[in-house]
Image 1: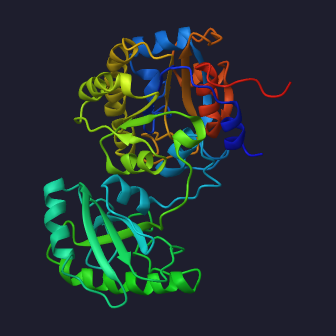
Image 2: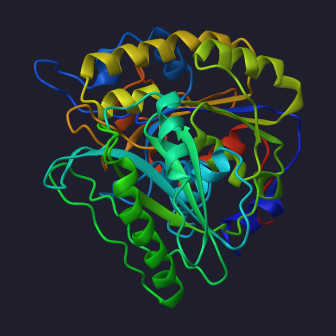
Length: 401
């Protein structure tokens, strides 16, 4: 019996409400002269109050020492083992914009980038163009035709787009063309098996033609591709947990993750205030709410310690509005750490807290990496968080006689 089968056997429907608030990239590191991390530096009276009432710990998104992407990080939080469910980012982006994916499709996440005269990448995000500018450039890419597949190009947000190839016999075991570094050349697509070689050939043809289309579009004069993926088979949150679930998120990828596991997508504005208002409006319609906050991650990736501190403080200011709805379980965590010191995702475990009437308070004096390190939850695998959420909501029965 696997974990999902056990949950199906033990789950109980009791009308309780669970809120999972994910501050993307929440965990950090000290940057001198700051003695603490971004979370420890921020003024967070509301999160600190939650910590004093609840139970804290550190979650490991995949395995100790492994740096997760956002896809594996979130799937773990939803209770899907990221080592078992290896889902490429392309399908998540495609689902996030509600692209009608078919069984013939290979979906790919695209980034516009800046290429130097020698062909090396000088800016992996092309200066973060506006979404309107992204749409203009995508319109030009749509003129590209390649033999062997139907091509779809869709704008996402800022420098991001979705590329979909549709044909019989395509595979998704293709390497990223993004070297994940500046000063490096883009990589050629290579397939690991015969169907994936077919995909790689189509990809390389498309990229070659894109060079001509984009050559006058600096700083967005190039593109990189990653996260090749076909549509996977995965059980829904309703099927596994018996929870009618909804997501409040802005960025398409996180909408895609939620849609993948069967959540309804609740559209809201870009601010935490509008998100909390949307949460309130839908409160009676769902059992489980996934509320995503992106900006703790983007400021970390920008290497801006002070800005990440400010975004954490903005997150803290939204906590009273969520608690006013009286969720039976409130969880605050991140999908991974993004220390501004590293300007990237990292392997560090993620601060996590649970607030519920069934919590065993652990004496935490605030919500921080240091407090969570000695908290009652200990250091645990993120894939077990939904078990803890269900238990603290009184939604799991006894196992065995």
